[in-house]
Length: 337
Ligand code: PEP
Ligand code: MN
Image (cartoon, rainbow, N blue to C red; front, side):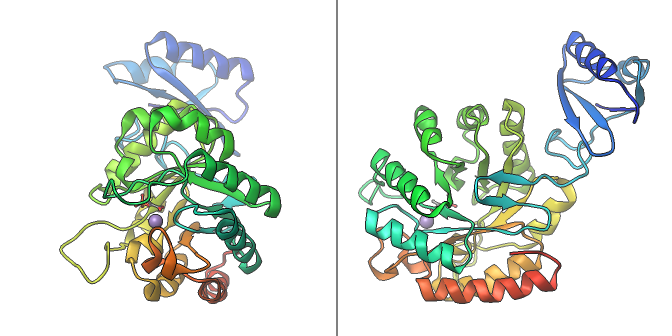
């Protein structure tokens, strides 16, 4: 249920509603909107609940939330959520650009990528220190050493750090270095991990699982929101289909769909979404035209010799060209990049 408080509801009346919701065995979630305050009552609904909440002091209206995800829904919050993490701003008119290598490999590799990405317009640096690899024999990441290199690159450039956390036991460690915790596609439905990152006090970039529906993605986001973290970015990174000309199939309709259903910002990953360097620029531009609030792009000083995902990474010049096209598209659709 959503309890919409009157415009002139007092802090005491809002607090009263929070207590009332709690006493009914439901979890209160307060949202202070520009217009008015909403108190969501999350939990199993029962007969008479609506009527009971309606009688509270300062209450304007009580409505059921029809979507299965509650805190993530547009019904709960109509204004878009803007996620800020240091230099990164995603949502509203701003399009955030998270760029950098798939994996952190060395100080020189990461720092040169950070400097080049920033110069071309990136607003955050990506780089995996813990890598989820299909084969156990592939490069698994530099782990804490990689996190230290990311922190050093932030010190040198001022770029916020976005990096993946693979396991619940690593959340505290990764949160010590990162500005944004990335949940990878393979972990989208690792619910204990979602709860743990939701309590880590860092914004979260949640990637869509390659076999997950939009509803499953939104319910995964709900775990993070319910655990206490309001700053969640959803990431469309492509799904698995019968089609094999690209590594994954990148459905850009999900950007518009998600904007209709949720207030959370949507980031697109055309690198994993296509799996081919030569397709990334066009799909990055198309993502912005579709309304994406952010991009995450793999950029490497020497893609041919990358430890992971070189075949879909942009070199510095290609990234610069991509940013030039994206800026023009952003301007055409009333966004800033
Ligand atoms: C990555 O960002 O390098 C990554 C592993 O992405 P995904 O989880 O989308 O496969
Ligand atoms: Mn990658």
